[in-house]
Image 1 (cartoon, helix red, strand yellow):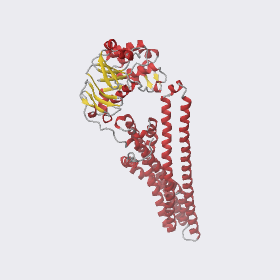
Image 2: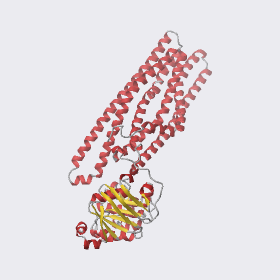
Image 3: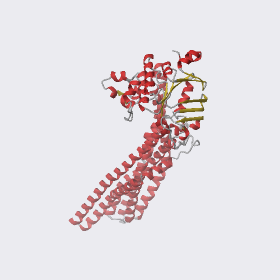
Length: 568
């Protein structure tokens, strides 16, 4: 992963400003309530000092009753303001974290609209969309708590100044000194935390890679080497986590020690002033009480810079994804329904001016002699390679892809890759995720998934494990094909949809696809004789261009190279 800041701007500060601006109302309400909480809590020792002062002077039950009532009001204010203040802030925090998670996920789901995102892998983006989003949203709580802690310090300083100006100045000077020291230490926390987050994300990405390739790794005995690689990455993350823990521990210990020193200094100074007769006993009680109570807001106040640095580090990592410039700006047009598909002079990867047309309602097969050329064509049609990334034009329903939004393209044309993902859930939710398909039974039958459904008592509601771990390779492929057919899009592109099924099943699937998709535009990129024979015509893709075009049987009879390439 690239770590330099010279490649593109990473406005982490702008993300924090956006979070603050969107929640200004909740933050104002939370700040008022938390400020009231801190003021009431700080008023408690002040009230105790006044009670001691006036009770010793008046020595009346009436004064004692008023004092007790005042304390009850203060305690009630402390309880309710904290409860409702934190409710407001945590709701805003949770909502904002959700917004950022959705925004990062949206970027991950629209790869065409983003560059390579500095080489981040899916596991790293997952960490950014979860942990970093949560830590960035924490800024919504940090600012109100910072302000409310400042209120407590100011109230305490003013109250102590009324008793003796030296006590108030001691609190102010001590607070400034503590924050100055901790501000320097918090910078180290920010840089260490950012490095830790990056290493944890790399470990997560490595786990994702291992899960995807676990079966092949077991197949050729490479699992031990792969696990060793993960262990090294995980060890780096562990060491960095220990470093961060040490820095955080040093920060917390220093903050606690400095706060205790300030509290002790206030108490000792107040005791000395009382001994000298410059403050009364009530003022002494107030000063000592404030010295104890002020430690909590001081502790909170001194911890805020650390959380600000953590939030900023997380925002910088989110900016890796969110601020990546778009590769292309999608157009506003929409393709005509039921339209044709035209590839005109496309040069991308191994493709060398590829040109062909699939008419509306036609079933066409492409027989690629080189697998890489098939993958490059699928990338172009799936808009994983945006129009600026290749030469030539692709038209869908008469409209160029560059003039269409990604949503419009995918609504009218579905490109189903040979390695389509299987999700945890049921057979039904994998075939019809939205629950709106009108052709689900037909798709199940056409893909020959009926035996899998009949095999289990739950039928379509049979539970599927993550990545289809409880299904065979052929079952997973047929499930993916059923999902593509159930979508019932105007244009369907299938890439090697039957490589994991037996020859008899393949023959049945080929006939079923041709029957179910009759009158709908269908393009199959395959070397399967059954699918090639079911197509209206076959295009031979060799060295990045179309070199022959005819029916499968005519090509078999007259093209020896084609016969060798597709015969099994």
